[in-house]
Every structure is written in structure tokens, then in C-alpha cells.
Length: 218
Image (cartoon, rainbow, N blue to C red; front, side, top):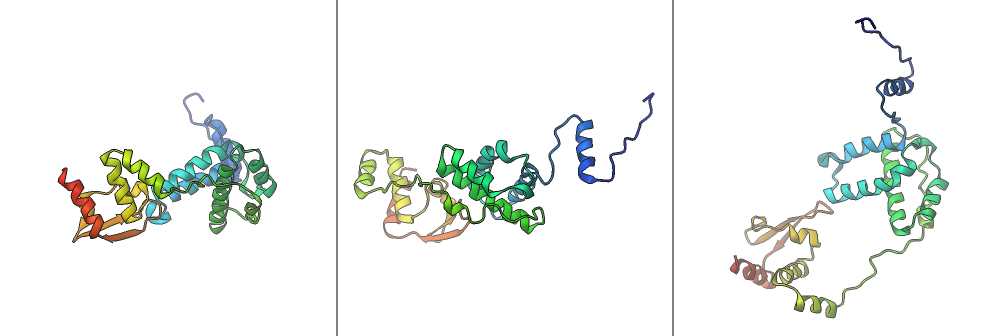
């Protein structure tokens, strides 16, 4: 006032001080013990690949789960979460398969928080996930006939990808990112997206034939 700065005491309680500070700055206060506050710390930790060891795909999956969970639980204090809240979420969620995966993610976050002193209550998801009956969407078995039909009608690029996937046993995402520079001393070196594991596959037999076929087309 009148060209002079005026100090506004925020009190001795840290949480209340932060709340008052947020009000003065005209922004929404997010408690450090709310699920949104805890998840903010969790994702900062998860984003450090060296510390968390999580793959980029796993991190993206976690963020997609939180997109649905945050509107429901974001403002809830993590120590006030109850099993019945999670069961109600499961029952009211349209996709039960998806709901179960989202609650499994919350269970992981609860355990992560307890290990770091951010949560003092018991994990509210412990013991209830088994009660959540949800059918996995991965119920289709690809028969040899199915595989052969796709192979017959696919482009040469599709055939190459199918051959490499079949001969190496790697996931599609790992097949698509393979480069010639991944080969040294007749060995294909792969770092799996999902697991982060390093895999070495000798280039012999049919796999060598497929790679030579691809290379011949430049």
C-alpha cells in the first residue's frame, strides 16, 4: 500500500499457509496429501527412468488411468480413502476391465506412498481387487489359418513384420523400432519397450533369410 510492501502472516501451520498463499495468488490449492498432490510427486518420480525403471509405454498407461481417476478421487485425502470408495467406482464404471486396471494402479500408488511416508493408513485396495470380476479383452487366439490369411493378403511390409515377429517372438512395438544398427556380429540386440530387458538373438536360419530379403530391396 502507498508504494510499500505489506507482509501478510500466513500462520504457523504449513498446510494452512499454503492454502492461504494459493488464495492470495488466485489459484486452486492442492493439498500435498490429496491424491492429486501425491500423484504429482509420483509422476515426477516415475518420469525419471533411471530411478523408477518404468518404460515410456507403462508411464503413458499410468497417465491414462489417472485421467479417469482424478475427477473422482483427486481431492480426496489419501489417508481417508476407503475400500468402499474403490468398490463403488468399480461398479459404476462402464468398463469393468478398465476399472480393475485403474484400481490396480491406485493400489500401486498407495504402496509407493506408504513406503515414502506420504500415506499412514493401510492400503484400501488390499484384498478387494480379487472381488472385482472383469473379463479380459484379450480372448482371441490367432490360429495358423488366421495368420496365413493375413500373410497372403498383406503387403510385403506386413509380411516382413509378421516374419520377424514370428521368428524373434518379440512384441509388435519392438519389431517396428528395429534398425540395422541394432545388428552386430550377426546378433540382433533388442531393448524391450515394455520390460526394459535387453535381448540378444542370433541371426541364423530363417531369420537371416528374412533380413537378407529385406536388405536386398534396400
